[in-house]
Length: 187
Image 1: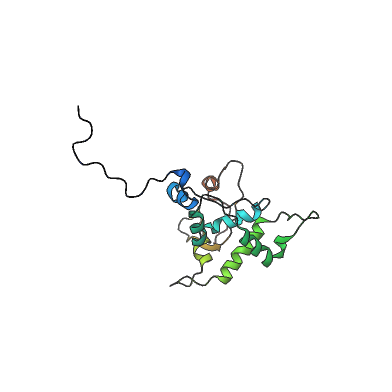
Image 2: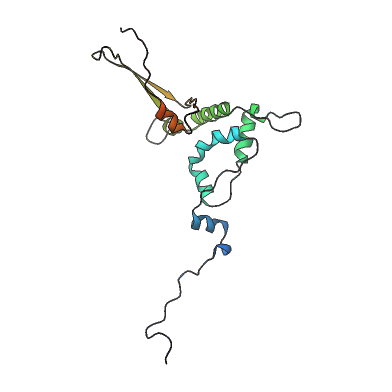
């Protein structure tokens, strides 16, 4: 009785087999493609929540894509405190105090708007293009459909959204909103 193969032996893999235990953090991040995030710095959710939308910026994504560990945004926090001392206030025990998330977001957006140059080929800045929106309001007369509607456009960098108990998410809030009708005397 003969054992073995009649043909050629299988070739060894070109790249050696690499087990998860043997991978570096960068190799593991590339192989698993797990999203990394920003580490919680304690009582700074007021700052983190306002910093999260800027996570789409290229450098941060590159950094987060090379690791499975969280990234501590300490440089951002230090620069924020240095440029805006109100965010560096401490309690009597020397612990940094809680701050207003809306104020933090407003300061960050205003600095980005003032300091970032216009995008290539446009007059719009980064904030105008990627961090702002437009609300279009249309006023029309229900009683007189022939009357020309009044259309108003308003740009915003902050959208006030007071969520009711019926909406668990922002999308739910907007889905539950109906056009408002109110008495209006025509022109």
